[in-house]
Length: 152
Image 1 (cartoon, rainbow, N blue to C red):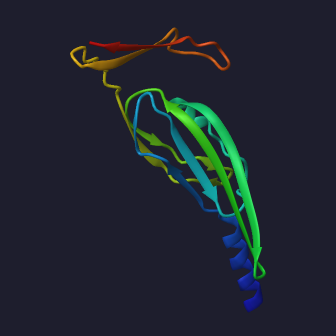
Image 2 (image 1 turned 60 degrees about the horizontal axis):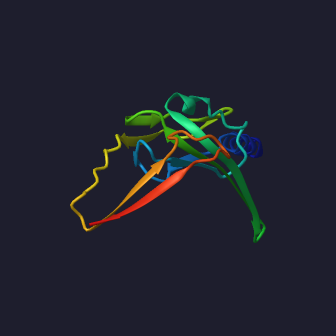
Image 3 (image 1 turned 30 degrees about the vertical axis):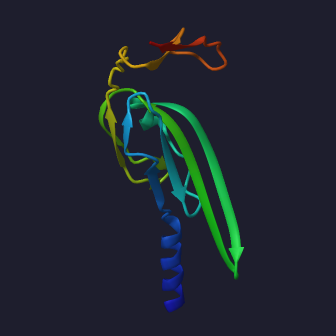
């Protein structure tokens, strides 16, 4: 009977995978990207559902890493999902818990500040002015980048 109880307890523990979500920064500018890392110590029930992120963010890149090791008869597995994204608006954004089948990550709060307009100090001895021909280029598009160096 004791053996049966221990077996049931281990099976219940094996079903729950802890997924830790972290952000590389908690305060970003509206024009900056943020990287979320979801780390699991074992294989979750299913692939992650990143659909809730599309409400407040534009996803730029996704990748997955996995590491397995066997040390002194102990097996260790670590799986990471890395998502780089841009905020769609300023304010306090709560990244919701992401579902990995029945398993879920923890929510994260990110503070997004509005970009301050840059002022050129034309009274300075030296200054640079940078311009591009487009503010929203697409992948592998040509972007004309003009750098002007001014001196008094």
